[in-house]
Image (cartoon, rainbow, N blue to C red; front, side, top):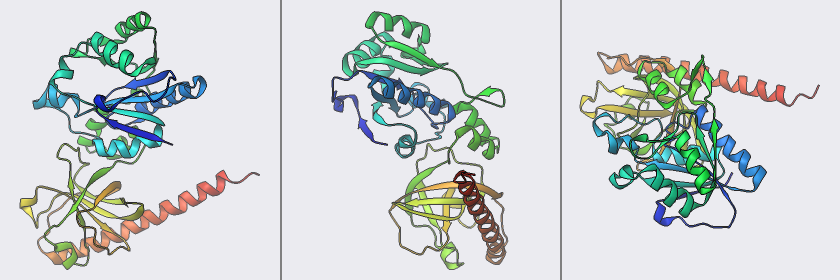
Length: 327
C-alpha cells in the first residue's frame, strides 16, 4: 500500500481534482473497529475513484481538553505511522490539536477544513462519532451539514466481540486489568512499543543476557509488568526474543523499564529507533535476592520463550500448508 503522511493542515494541498472520501478521528489503537472504518473508506475509494483520506490528531485531544484526565496511548504517533499502512492506502493528514482547534465549532471545521480545504464528498464515521467543540457535531448534525455542502455521511456499525463494541477505552481497561490477551484480541494486531535504545546499567550483559533498553513515549500505555516473548523490528531486521516490562529491582531509580533480550543478535544498536512487540506473557515481575537467582530464572524464561516461538513457527507453517493445499 502507498501512504502519504502530511503533518499539519498548512502543508496540505489537493493533488488532483478527484473527489475525496475521508474518515476522521483519533484512531488510538487502530483496533478492529477502526479497521472496519478504514476498510469501508478503501471500498468506496475503489468503486468511485475517490481519493482516500484519513484525518487524525496529535496530540490526543484529551491532552488539551482534559489534561489531568488524559488517557495513556495505545498507539503513539510514531506507532500509528507504522500500523496505518497495514490497513489504509491514501493520504493521512495529522492535525495539531491545540486550543484553537479545540474551540472551533463543528460547523466551522466542516466548512473550512473538510469542505473548502480538502473537498470531502463522502465522510465515513463510526457509530458513536462526534466532532468539534464539546463533541457537539453528532452524526445527525453532520448529516444535515452534508446536505447543505453536498457530501454524504456514511456510518459504520460497531464491531462486536463478546457482545460488546470494540473501543479504545475497552482495550485500555483490559490492559490495566491484566487482560493482555483480551486486549490483543480486541486490537486485531500486535501491540507495539516504539522507542530509542538507550544505555542501561549493563547488568544484563554482565549476566549473559544483554538487553536493548528502550526510551519510550511517556504517554504510552504499557502492558502489565512481567516477562514476555517478543518480536523486535530494527530497521528492516526482525528478531525474536524475550522482554521485561516493569520496575527493575536491581535499578530502582529507573522507574518503569522496557528492555528486550534478542536471540541470536549481538550488534550495537544504541541510539537507534526500534519497535518492540510484546507477544506471549511468561510470568509476573518478581524480586530476586541475588543475581544468581535472576540468572537461573532467566535461563528458564529463555527456554520457555524459545519453546513458544518454535511452536508458533510450526503452527504458522502448518497453516500456510493448509492454505496452499488445493485438494
